[in-house]
Length: 170
Image 1: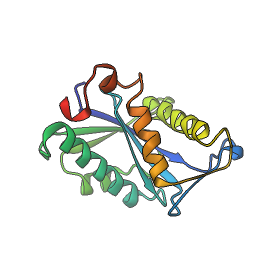
Image 2 (image 1 turned 90 degrees about the vertical axis):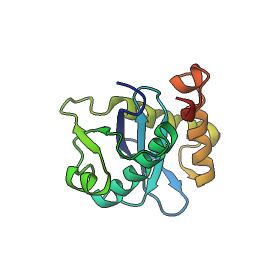
Image 3 (image 1 turned 60 degrees about the vertical axis):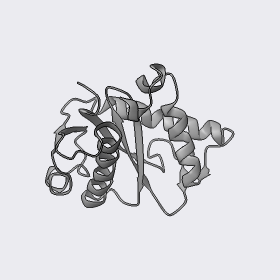
């Protein structure tokens, strides 16, 4: 795959269902984050959503794809994108096809789903915990969320930063 060709997506529930001690309260009443990672550059994009409804998630994915097309291809909408998601019902092929031009949704049948996106979800949680001094129940502003994403994107796991490029230079 090349830059922007395959983007793994997953949904992060801010009130962790596995560990009730890791609740994150994001301002604005958002309960989920749509997490998208370019598999080539490891460039992370995050958009908060209030529900995990297929329409709201599709709109968030549309915004992410537009950002990536602007960053990588000068906004050209004819460049095809592939989104790889797990089998969650929030990732509806019909809704995504309806909202995003030249974008196909691949559904992972493996138990690993969108493993790169899942790893980034863990990293987001860890960065928030460190930012907030190790507290498990946390209030988070949208500005702080942007800082977390920027920190991850500038870290060593990102092909973009490790090669000395910005996402727009690729």
